[in-house]
Amino acid sequence: MIKCVTVCIAAVWLMLGHCAVAQVVLSNQATELKNRFRIDHMVDSVTLLIQRDYGSAPVIIIQPDGSKWYVDRHPEHVKWMDGLTGDMIIIDKPTPGPWQLLGKVVEGSVIDKVSKLSIDVDPFPQPIFQGERIKLTARLLGDEQKVRLRGLDYLMSWTAKFVSDNNADDENFTAGTIVVGTYRDHGEELDERPDDGVFTSELDLNQPWGGYTLHLKAGNEVLERTYSKSLRLSRRPIRVDVAEPLTTAPGEWDLKINVDDSQLVLSETHINAELTGPGGMRLPFVVSDIEQAESLFHLAKVTDYGSYRIKLTAVSTTLGGREIVLSLPEQFFNYVEPPAPAPTAEELAAKAAIKAKQEEESAKQNAIFWLITVNALIFTLGIACLLFIRKRSNLKKALAATQARIDKESQEQDEIQLDEIDLTMPEDNDNQTPDVDKTQNI
Image 1 (cartoon, one colour):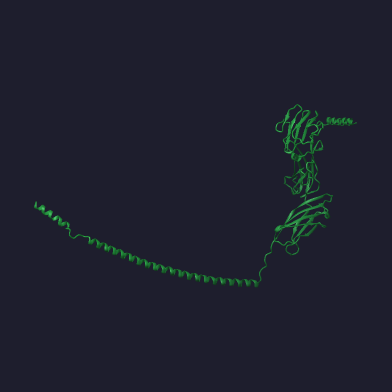
Image 2 (cartoon, one colour; image 1 turned 90 degrees about the vertical axis):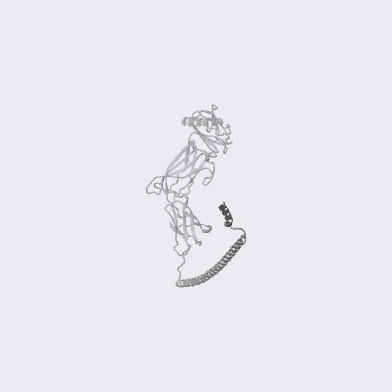
């Protein structure tokens, strides 16, 4: 009975192979055949999804004839994408027969051989609003089956773009192309589990409202799949503004809340907020029991002067029954210290009297200062003049004494020279006369 069932299943696959030229004989468990698999002769193209140990080198492919392909050395008709956790290899017109992989293929993993890869994307709900946090999923399909491969998030990148329809009446007119996010399978943010083959959206819908065309591209170096869909991004159905209070009490503010009751259920609309202010102030609060489309909410009274900020998110339910979460624009207000009141006549008179007294005291102090300064200056000049006169007189006396001493020394020198003259020696004329006489005698 078991053989019969097996034969029937094989026959079914054989019939499918004749109907679709890209059919693969399935033998997925890598450990059962020691990383070997077989490709049927009717396959025109095959994509191999291979799971390796994290960070290991790309696998080596051995063809039926024994020749080898490497990640950096293979024919042009082979497209090879290697990542941290696996390889994605697309082979056109593969050689029929047994193939083998060499490498650190994860034990117990599967070698997925698919002939057709596509993507399946959750459609955007309508209406969808500005600032909405939305969870959408997408999947990579191999032969219409979800591809689940550990590390597939590293092998595939998803990019979501909004392309404006350029309607003149919309806010997004001439907005062009906007990258709004991606899809990930990493078990973080809104993604429930990593490596389960379900990629979850991480989209920023804080964009201008209007008509768009969604362009979603999933791919890598060897593969690219796209998805397009028209949608409309509607205005936020909730608006919150800071309003000046009707009372004149200082430090009091109101929130003016407008809810579009043509799209949302008022009784299921709640606003979560946090008021932050000077000195590290943080005050969370929730606005519930919204019964009218327009309402006021009184904020807690603030006492410190400075700038304040209100972070806002809202949860609600559309009239169609869809639960939504919205991020709302932050609100700001400043609590400015009021100016001091104008002084009364009595206060002005008192200030004038104080000022006059201060000026009189200042004038008296200045007069005393200048009197002391002038007297000190006169005294200093008198002392300086007296010292100058005494020094001049002493100098004259010293000069006179010096001159007298010089004259006395000169007189004494002259007397000494007269005492040294010899009166007994003849004069020069007397010595010359005898010679003349002798001459005459001759």
